[in-house]
Image 1 (cartoon, rainbow, N blue to C red):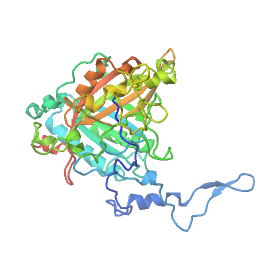
Image 2 (image 1 turned 60 degrees about the vertical axis):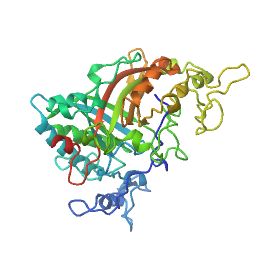
Image 3 (image 1 turned 30 degrees about the horizontal axis):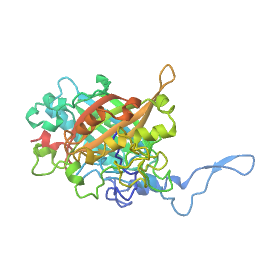
Image 4 (image 1 turned 90 degrees about the horizontal axis):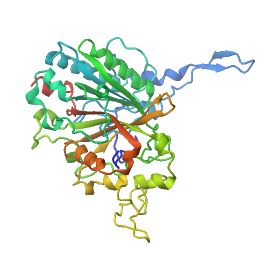
Amino acid sequence: MADQSIPEARSPEVPSQEPVPPNTPSKDGISRRTLLSTAGATGLVLGAAGGAVGYAAAPSEATPLSSLGADMAMFHGKHQPGITDGLQAKGHLVAFDLTAGAGRKEAAALLRRWSATAERLMAGEAAAHDDTDVALDAGPSSLTLTFGFGHSFFARTGLEKQRPVSLDPLPDFSSDHLDKARSNGDLWVQIGANDSLVAFHALRAIQKDAGSAARIRWQMNGFNRTPGATAHPMTARNLMGQLDGTRNPKPTDSDFDKRIFVPATGSNDPSWMANGSYAVVRRIRMLLDDWEKLSLQAQENVIGRRKSNGAPLSGGSETTAMDLDKADAKGEYLVPINAHARITRPDQNGGAAILRRPFSYHDGFDADGVPDAGLLFVCWQADPLRGFVPLQRKLDRGDALSKYIRHEASALFAVPGGAARGEYVGQKLLEA
């Protein structure tokens, strides 16, 4: 886990996608927002006499949706959604493999279906066919769907010449204990929303759209704090209780696009990756029983930051630059030499930077009561060989946090740029 994080949803540092007016009509001429705003017009209430149940009278004016449900991300754009958007409360990561006999034609039809479904669901509309009605009463809830291609996809579709060099498999790391069944995949879908039913509705729709063209290889469920749960926007905490990722690149940084997105020109990547990015996905189990036995001071020495407010041990606030040379009266560094935050600083790694956008997870307990919990680590970069790989190699050589985590699954996906109106994601690759 690098010392970088994306601010919570609604943070002013990470601008939301362009909002859609609430009365934008759907294909049937009635906006989903308008329809949903009348959902609370009637309801059950307890009667005053003997707890009798009756129907409440309809209010004179429709009750509007809360801001949480009404927030909407845009499907079409320069980049795919779900990369620079704020952290969402619920997430699903799912990888698919093309079925035997399915090739480029079937993959193109599948991405066309997935894109059409994503556009509708992100607008708060029902799926075009066989909608399950799971999200019938909800607004868009900041739903995003993001699609990517794995290394194996290109051989399966006869597109090897279009496979980016940056998609070469990640190297082995000493901290890896990888389950191959939960790693890699031909196709990848990231789903995020601020409502669990909205997120599940999207997951089910995507799985149904796969039809006979693809089957699920693995699927992981995650969560974050619900936007608005804190008094003010702040860096999210992970399951270790730490503020996770203070130094995340921000879209306002002058070099943000250069670090995170493949440029439209001047890149070694194929042209279909213009404005796209690379997603590294890692299931990182946290050994919480061992971690929670440490004293507060020991935990802070492992990370290199205060647990209470994320400030570096060298002093200041969360955003204060870390003084790596500052020592105590005994001459010992205030930020230990193997502290996680020291090792992952970009200026200590040739400027390597990643945009973290993770979810926490909890998949129950082992037979001996040990929690199967941790981080669904998702990071974005223009080139994983200059982003994730050098950082992870550095961590491999002496990160104090390594003793308390275990990397159990891994994948790398090429995520093309956003689809223009009338296009589907990956069209420039599949119809080249």
